[in-house]
Length: 433
Image (tube, rainbow, N blue to C red; front, side, top):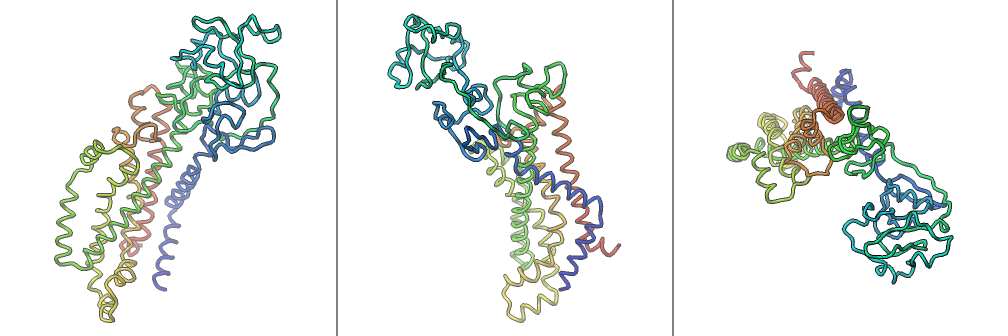
C-alpha cells in the first residue's frame, strides 16, 4: 500500500514538471504517428477499386496479371505504363526500340512471338488500313517492320491496339507521400531525380513530383526516409534499453545479493569485458557476417547492460543486510523470491531514472554507426546515412537540415523526460523539495 502511494506521488510530481510532461506527450505523438509509416509513405495504393473490385496493394502483393497485364511480377503502381494499363489505354513500344528500356540488351525477332497463342505478328503489307499504325511501328534489326494486332501477348513487351481499349472505372486512395524509403523513380516532371530540392534552387524543384523534402543522392524521397528512419531509431533505442536493463538487473542483482566471491569474480569479469572496444568488435564481426539491424542489436547488447548493472549491484549490496531481508530469510523464503519480491521492487529507482538516457544512448549508437557506414547497409532507412549524405553534399540543405532538426529534437525531448523522471524519483530530490 505504501509503495503504491509513493509511486502515485512520484507520478504526480513528474506531471507537475511542465517541460517533462510536454516533452513526453510530444515524443509519444510523433513516435506513434511514425509506427504506421507504410500508411504514410508508400509506392502502393492503400485501396484500388477497378471495375467495382477492391484491391489492397498495401497489404496484399498482387501481380500485373491481376489487373489485366501479362507479367507475373508485382507492378510498379506509379509507372505511366501501369496507369495506362488500368485505364485501358493503348500501350506500344517506342518508334525506335533502342530508345525503349525494355529492348536494351535483347536480341529479339518476330519469330520469338509466333508461338504465342495470344499474339500475332504480321508484316505491314498484310495488314488492313484500319490496323495500320505506322507511326508506332517498332523497327527491328535486320527485319521488316512488324505490327501487333492483339490485346495481350506472352512477351516482355505489352501492345494494345486502340480497337481493344476500353474505359475502366478506377478509384484509388494513396498515402500522403507516394514514395517509400527505397523507391527510386525513373522519370521526373522536374527533369532531375537525384538531389532534387523541394523548392526552386539552381536545380529544378522536385515539389511537383511529390517529394516534399526533396530527394537524396540516389533519388529516394527524403521525407519517407526520415519517417522510416525515425521509427527504426526509436524502436532500436527502446529495444536496446529494455534488453540492456533486463540483463543489467539480472547480473547486478546476482552480484549484489550474494556478494563475496560471486561479486568479486563478477566485477573482474565485467571490467575485462567492458575494456573491449565495441567499435573494433563491430568491425571484426562485420567482416564475417552481413551487417543487419539484428546483428547490431546483438553486438550493442554485449555492453549495454553494464551501466545499469553497476547501479543495481549497489542497491542490492545496500539492501541485502536490511531487516526485512533478514526477516524473509529467517522465514525460509527462497533467494529468488527475496530478490524478485522484496529487494528488486525497492531498487528500481535507478532503472526508471536512467531509462530515457539508455534510449538516447541506443539511438546515438545506431546513428553513429550508420554515419560511419558500419551500420545497416543501404537501402535500409537511417538518419545516420542521411547525415552522411548531407555532409557530402553541403549544398543539399534539404537533406541535412531536416535530419539534424529531427535527431536533435528527439534527443532533447528524451533528455527533458529523463530530467523530469530523475527529479520525481530521486530520493535526494524529494528530500530537498
